[in-house]
Length: 336
Ligand code: FDA
Image 1 (cartoon, rainbow, N blue to C red):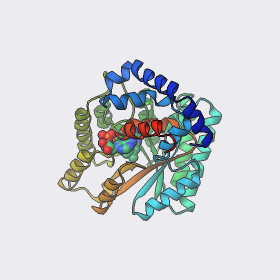
Image 2: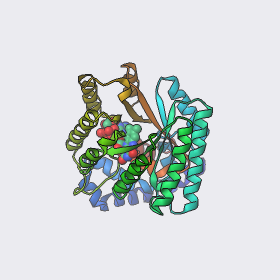
Image 3: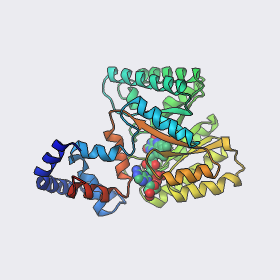
Image 4: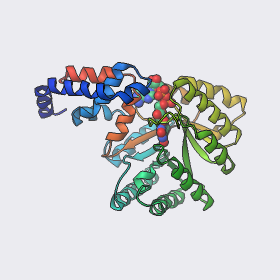
């Protein structure tokens, strides 16, 4: 926080705290649906009222920086630790074609930089960044352009999965790209979504490269599992289906229970190292990351960077059990 931010923050401190807790109290829907404890709920519901500079201080734990050079530096360091990377240019739900084309150009730069710097990394993208909600054909041609550039470098593009308003269209676009003969592209399945079992069943014949994660978006109960255990159970069911279907799986989780379960199934199913990889987010559970690599498994770190860090950071805060402690400390000891 700059000195000026700190002063403003101190002056409006009491008002802000009152608004902050009020916002949390009236956010009944979140309080009802989330499994997290009450204190965490208060903090998270009111987080959008905090000064941006303060939020940024927490955000930078999960983000390489604002520039491509920052991401290159972070991925180089990750590679030195025998881990792979996947880079993500932050930004989603853009509303104009110009913004989409700018995002395509930024992603092209990433692919060139990976090649020039001899990084062991690929690229993750979000379809809403490339115009999925503006015009599907436009989005398709933007993604195709990147996949072709990646193919020229023998590299790979992962299409992230966003909220449920995009699931069907994302899988459709993925299927279309595969039917057009593009092999260097993969997609994501979310274990919290009730539809995922059916989606995996349909996908398996393509021998897809799938990242399996729990799902980062709060979805209605009608279409999504909410309980921790049922999400874990579904994760394991989907993992089994993917392994049996001989798909390449990115086991994307920091959950010790799921990592342990995968550890057990890998030798039982006689999987080769090249059949799967573990995946984790930059800034989360680095000790687990190190252990997985020391145990001889392949591991990829998701490294986001860019100026549009806000939406991504808020999703990560919601998953961070330490969040309450950090925010309260910053609220009551802003100079610290
Ligand atoms: P869980 O949330 O239960 O976390 C297990 C433990 O890990 C926690 O108890 C805590 O100790 C630690 N932890 C987890 N998150 C933390 C955080 N932010 N800060 C500090 N500690 C934390 N989602 C999606 O919807 N679409 C996508 O495309 C992707 N892509 C993706 C790529 C990769 C590489 C990963 C690892 C994850 C995703 N996700 C995602 C996010 C995913 O859906 C999920 O929200 C998070 O991974 C958290 O779920 P876990 O499985 O880690 O379990």
